Image 1 (tube, rainbow, N blue to C red):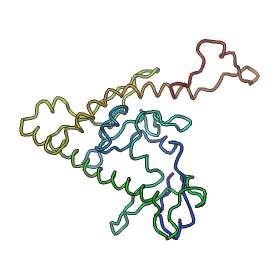
Image 2 (image 1 turned 180 degrees about the vertical axis):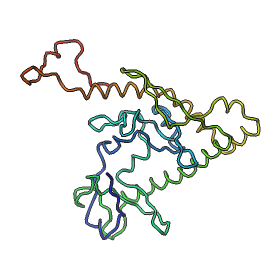
Image 3 (image 1 turned 90 degrees about the vertical axis):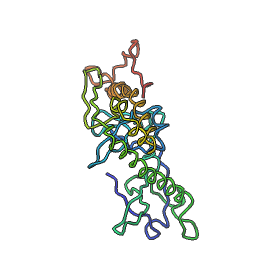
Length: 262
C-alpha cells in the first residue's frame, strides 16, 4: 500500500529518486482517471467510460473486468496498451492538500524508488531549491489537476442534459460471458433527441469532444476479454511428469506456449 509523505528538505535533502521502469504499481487498478486533454490519444487504444463519484461523473479508462486486476499490465510490469494514462506518468509523486488547503508535492515512500542522492535524481539542488526534475514533475501534475477540474465542468454539462446513462457490459470469455457493472456511457439516443438549444448548450460548454471520444472508445471493449484470456494462459504452470520434473514434451507440439500477446 502506498505511503505518501510531503517532500521536504528535512527529509529529502540528502536523497534522490529513480524513475520507474515497471507499471507493477498499477497492476491492481481496474480503472484509471482520465482528463479531457488526454482523451484524443486515449481513445485510440483504451475503452473509456464514466464512474459516479458522489453526485458527479468522471471519465475513466476501463482496464479490467474485476476489482484488483489491470489487464493492461503484463506479469513483467510492461504496459500493454498504446497509451498510458497521465495519472500514472508522474509516479511515485502526487499532489495533496493540507488542512490549510495548500497543495503540496508528495512521494510514495514505499515505492522502492527513493535512493541516495548520488544514485538518482536529486530532490533539491546545491542551493536548497527544488531540482529541475522535481519542478518538471510538479508542473506536469499541476497541469493534469487543472485539466481535471475543467473535465469535471464538461461532465457536469453532460449530466445537466441527462446524457450519461448506465453502461451494461457483457464480455465474452473462454468460460462464458461476464457482466461488468458500475460504469456509465453517453446516451447516444438521448443525444440525437436534444432540442437545438440543448445541443448548443453542450457545444458551447466544449463537451462535444468528450462525447465523441467516449462513444468511439467503446470499440476497444473486446480487447479486455482477449487480454484476460492471455493473462490466464500466461499464468498457467508448465506441465510436469509424475515424478515432479518439468515435462518439456509440449515443445514438440504445435500448441506451444505463446507469450506474444502480452
